[in-house]
Length: 201
Image (cartoon, rainbow, N blue to C red; front, side, top):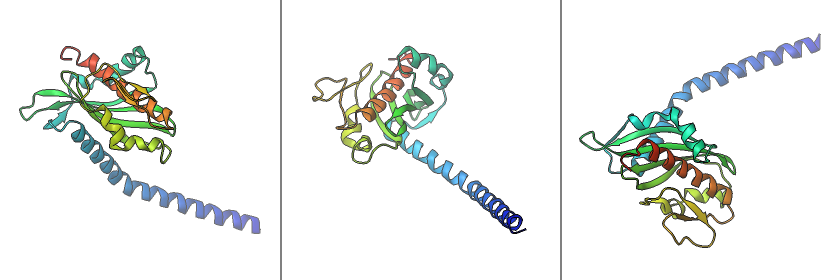
């Protein structure tokens, strides 16, 4: 009888806990989604300060992305979103991309990047990262991110001996995997933009 009573109590507690968690999820999911969307939009504006707005266009057909990325040897990269960057008159001046590489040391690394119509990478912002504190997390610092600013290259490589060329990035000390993941995300975005905006780049 005691076992039956204990089981019933445990079941009631489990049901109440489940309902509570469901309620909390429902009331927090919209604010969390809104916060993530704001962070993304802020990142887009940071990587394309010249743009007045962002909108879907020819660049936005990300269903083409897998074939483009596979052809570039970047099968672990995904293009999550691609938007035209528009000037005040509504004319495209480039694009912004949200790109994820799944091979970070701590899992997915997602970045935002802005690319002008002639192919110059304005820069990158980190949207999501879970790397090792003091090592891979240094990817979020300007010293690392700013290496990508205002570069017009087909793709980047990293070096551990000091960057000498426009296309070279100094690797994060002790965080080669993180460096490679960010680099692959950037190179994936460049490959996609070069294909989709190829006529202008």
